[in-house]
Structures are given as structure tokens and as C-alpha cells.
Length: 224
View 1 (tube, rainbow, N blue to C red):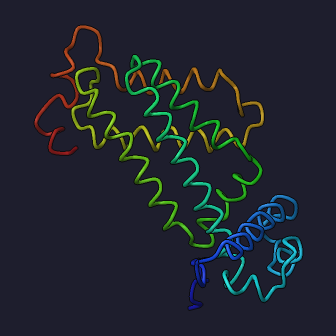
View 2: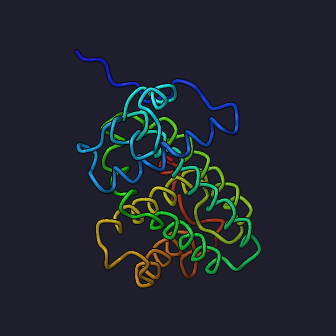
């Protein structure tokens, strides 16, 4: 069986000039992926677009798969930072406002470069570069979890760890799905529906207390 391609960089830049070279290579890789697609991209083409020799590219990246993984990790870190900043900004806002603004931030971050994001969503699982993306997603879930813990009195789910997983995965899936529909990118109607979805999950049902809603019995509690 053929070994999977390496998706980690050969080395990390240590000097400013080296960092500038890596940044130029990644920016070129993003342009080539958007303009030529994954199959049309190769290290020679990317090096030429970056204005560096292919040997310089290979000092940092062993193949195009590692470039895709690095771009995906960079995008994931940017989305994670946007989420963390927005949650901090609305931590004292009413629940409905906070939920809407956080979802808006996630949608906007994904739509910042929709063509590149689409390529990365399609190719990262294919090349096996999910480790950094998964780590970033786990951190984002932890940020949401911390906020849910602070709002325990306002929300219905008692298992806040599971709730954080449900919310982050659901919003991420909607953000990814919107990229396949140009009419949904930046569309406030999608934002309205996503906000209603999350609030419907988080808010206690009428006539119930947030202390005695989900789970409804001991068996459900054990399952969660």
C-alpha cells in the first residue's frame, strides 16, 4: 500500500526573511489553487508564482499536499481567532444577540475567500491534512464551551460539553454548505435561520425550567 503523502512542513521559518518567503509561497499556492484547481496546481507553478526557486519551496514544503494542509491550518486559525474575539465582545450581551453575532462572525470568516475555502474543504480530507484543522476546531469548541458554562442559567442543555460540540459542528456545516450556494454567501436570511436553529436548541421550552429540561430521564443522561 502506498504511504500517504507528508503534510507537515520540512522546517519552520526562524528569521524575518524566511517568514516572508513562506508567506509568499502560501499566498501563491492559494492563488494557484483558486485559478487552476488542486489537480492543476504543482510545486513548480507555485514557486514561479511566488517568485522563488522550487528548491527554496522544498526547503519548507515537501509537496503540494503539505501546502494545502498549511493553508487549511492558517485559515482555521484565522476563523478560530475571529470566533474567540467575537465571543469576548458579546459575552455580556443578551443570549439572542450574542448567538447571532457569533454565527455572523463565523459565516463572514468562511466567506472571506470563498473560492479558496471551497478548494480547501474539498481537498484537505483527500490529502490527509486534518490534524491542524481538527486541533483548531477543538479549541473553537472549548471557547464556545466556556461561554455556555457562563450562561448555564439561560440555556436548556445540561450537558454543556455536548452542546458545544453540537453548536460548533452545526454552524460550521452551515458555513461550509453556504459556500456551495453563491446566493447564500453573506445572506442575512441564512443568518436568521441559523440563529433561530441555535436559539431553539439552547433556550428552555415554554413552561419548563432550564434546570429540569434535557436530558429528560436517567437513561438519556447516561447516553450523553
